[in-house]
Image 1 (cartoon, rainbow, N blue to C red):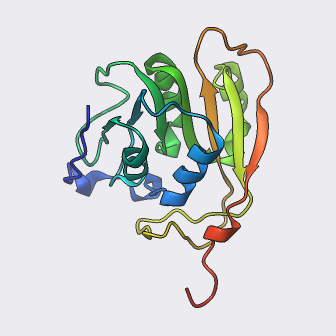
Image 2: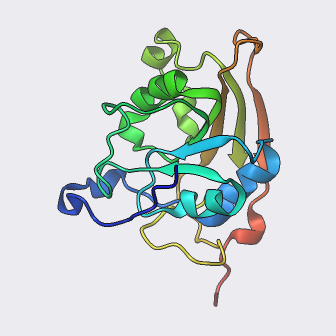
Image 3: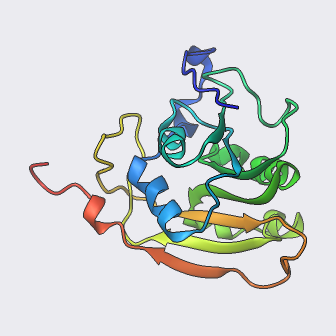
Length: 195
């Protein structure tokens, strides 16, 4: 199931304003806080240059990754086998579409990294985007998502608050319950002066 080639595919067409790599520590902190079974299948369908997938490959055996601009895989249009989990940082402009597609593909649950202000919106509410939303993990510091990520998982602070949104997709889950808000203390990953 492993597909980890990061050769640019139509790289010149990627929308720079909607491409942000996820520092390794942000994915690691999700996995520390939200339970996942490592023997299950997992996908990162908006993998970009592979930041999230790099972390997933260290913990899971069955990882699929793909990206429209880097591998030519279009999650919203191409056929994809069902997987147990999805963890990804989608293009924010297509977040609604990614969530609806994840609800079709993820057998167990899925987590998307999105701005905290994604929680509002009448259209999202009407489309039942938030149905099944189980937990919102809010970062205590504003991480800056950039093209360049560091091996140590550290990053500068930015102007936007991010959170991991986790939807549960299995039948026994009561999708009518209100989601839980939890915090991830990411202070130790914020770069200080001189780093």
